Amino acid sequence: MGSFTVVIPARLASTRLERKALADLGGKPMVVRVAERAAQSTATRIIVATDSSEIESVCKASKLEVMMTRADHPSGTDRLAEVAEQLDLHDEAIIVNVQGDEPLIPIELINQVAMTLESKPHCAIATAAVAIEDQQEITNPNAVKVVLNKNNDALYFSRSAIPFDRNQSAPTYYRHLGIYAYRARFLHAFSKLTISPLEQAESLEQLRALWHGYSIAVYITPESPPPGVDTQTDLDRVRQFF
Image 1: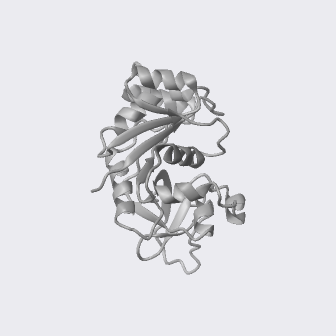
Image 2: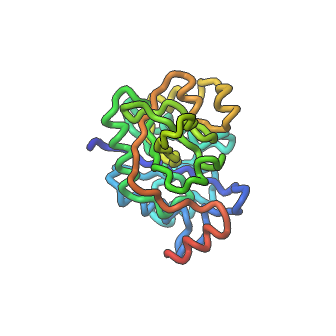
Image 3: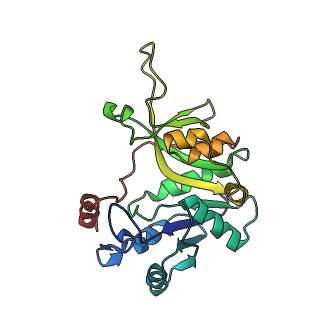
């Protein structure tokens, strides 16, 4: 497997859980726990990307590589694009975006998403999905579904139940997981892509890439990873682990 870089976007501003990037998990801030987790993958470089001098100080104190980025980025992908620009990465370089609120992310999931993108040169992005076992998730708009072609490339992402089971054929439904690997050439182009009407309708950023003709490879993981930290209840659960 070739080399890849993990970038962890981390901000202090969080609507549901204040300052969660620095929330204590067994004596270490969450962003440090996430970086230490990512360091167990086969990534050759781990970078925390932030707009907070406080997060920067915490990372430096923990001997983590950290990069200051602009505060006005509308999305984590835009923050990654700035990192790719600052690092002057070549077009085929692979960057895996690990969310800063997933301290229990499976190490193998990081590796597999990077490997999936590496194995598909026609794709600009790779992500992951898992077969849905809880039938209530199929109609839950917070559980994003993805439909695939025969090569496991994404055809569409939606908050609706797709495919619609008109003939009661019991298709397999897949829930999208929010981990991405990008080729640097896509990140270099991303900021110039116009927002698509599909993205606006579904509020799903990955639809911008599909709208503009980019291919997204999907790795099907055999089991659902632990959820990230969005609420105080999530934080309490993860604290028990640490």
